[in-house]
Figure (cartoon, rainbow, N blue to C red):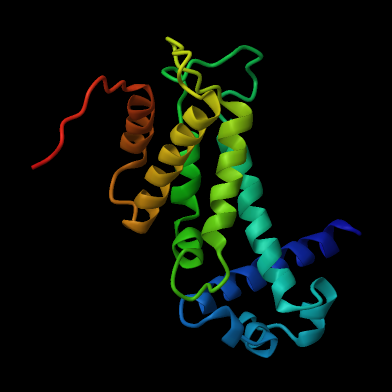
Length: 196
């Protein structure tokens, strides 16, 4: 594929994805037709079928593209490090940058017009990263604590904070969220009291 053709492919695919995302703000995926996508993108059906067999392929590629970026964002701050990274030193700003950059995508995909469970896909990819790449082991290991359950607790908490942030229209600055997620992950609660 020559450079000119490659640029045309990239441009047309980008427009199809942008169009689909725009349409998903207005209606359910099941209600969107290929005819509507190509009309809004100002292409013909032949161009669409050159790239995709069905609209599901377009949606899947759009999600894959953003998840590829998400994986890069996870590793952004320590990809060149061969050493262990202490969670206190771990900057998660790159991760929150990613969500801000793709704000429209995440708000749309987590919105009411997506009937399949995109949120589960997002949770699974974040779980995979946190479990495989970050060691959440406690400093003072208690032999009575099940480490697998400890990991689940930590990972679920961090993912919950991120999802809450997205659902609340990114109500805090990214720097604040990055700082808070590290502070919360390293905070130790010795005792709790029951609210009355």
